Length: 445
Image 1: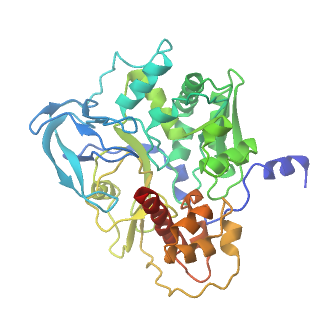
Image 2: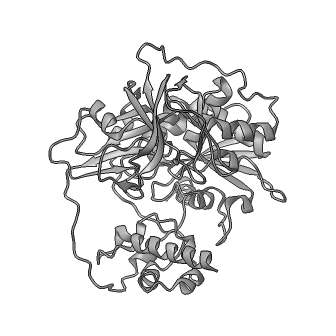
Image 3: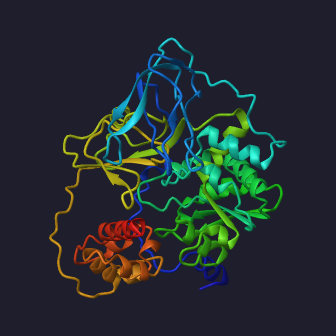
């Protein structure tokens, strides 16, 4: 093994798994989803407090106009994805399974749907405080799946310092390729967004972690970052969950985020490449988060694609644009197959944090659960070095205090343990039950 290979192998984290990639859509350019007649915009589609409506039924709205305001610090705004009329403010189906209040906007078929440039967009003269407020008003959230309000990460807590900004371009979940295409087609926007992030938090260096199966994207980013010398594109081993922020920090900086701590405690801020591109768009035109790129894939999809989809488009409409589903479809998942959520219906809208719509004809495995055989595979897979087998037993017993003592809250629900378990124990589901028990115990005190 040569020195270059030895250095390469060091660019990863310990443990993890290697599921089949299924990145067949990586060669498909991003295409725009045509406008539809109606959009459903849940007030709760980000981490934190739901947005507060600013409109009434019958009101005309412009594309990009704020229709719901942040209702607290950890909350963000919501904007009209099209020019049209507010048709309803009512409870509608939500991808989380619980119906949620939503604003329904019916499109104006005669409007141009042109997004006007906002004179209030951020500039180089915008102060850090003003940028935080502007990002919150623009509704930017993390686009890697968690949908955490972006403005919170842009504010370094008092007494802390941010020396490094890391962008997640790993896209380690199988099937998903929207970030790959975004990095390849909009490398300049990703780099611009990274520079804005670095300037905002005062970072001295920026990194973009890209898995080795996206060499074309890594090359495009490297070419776009040629000026300055303060940004490095790091090619990482193809492994799941390489894109988790703790794993990224370990792989790139070789530093471990302690239990109960955050990346900022290691002077690091982590964002997704999609979030960086959205920040660049905000600076260029004032564009709020009204659309996102997502992947439509799986063997039940007639025409897989990478699409730029307005937020609020129903999943059924996206699938119809892709030729519809095959009759033998058994499952539709929003997000990736490891951490995404299976849906019981398709009348739910695309949210800001949804990176993929996957559909499969394969029957969902109904293998009976067997007793744990103490094989240790879940321990070898867990990227945060927990003991999923023991935690599962404690979760079944609802032993909240013991679960907390065994670092239950460090679990990031990546499902690596469930993936490797030969006994078909629903470990990740038990992890979620265990975390809920710990939260309930804390709330009752």
